[in-house]
Length: 212
Image (cartoon, rainbow, N blue to C red; front, side):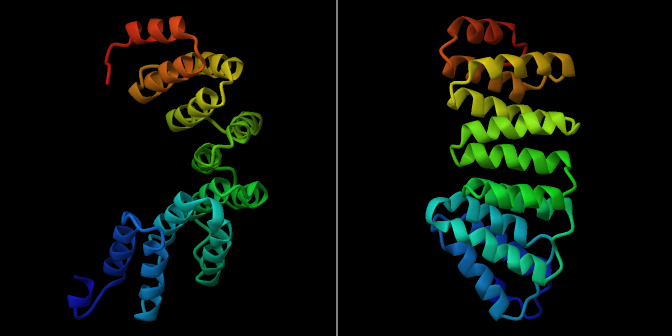
């Protein structure tokens, strides 16, 4: 379809790149980006977040890929927005480069969306302790957790079998007033179940007004 457009605007190229990120082959997103550059298209603010998401999804041997993409972000002057910075945070965290993830977090000026990216990125990379520590650092830094924050850290608590922190997060959720969020409720039930506290999981499930 892209090849059939005689005059391709940047959104068309960005759409091509974003669509390729959903393809099953790991290399498709990077190959599509390279093809986009070869065709003379200039990346914009919508190009790099899905590309970095694809890189983060690859993980493991792709550890050097976020730095390569980051170099292009800087080259094209697109790393100043919280959206792009958060994508960098998540990609670095997912491949285990905690130092680079923290540096990107500073570039995002500690925005809650960037903290969320750090927490979820470490969780995606199965570094559940790092995910939990990132949540603690977020709270100490004075950033306000969001429902997305709670879902991510509760997932880390459950998969890391950290019931103590999970209970503390549950208390904070209640105090914050977001308990009516279905995704947070479900994350709490899942956390208690994964930590083998079936009684608490069942009580929460019974108290849910809406169940998915």
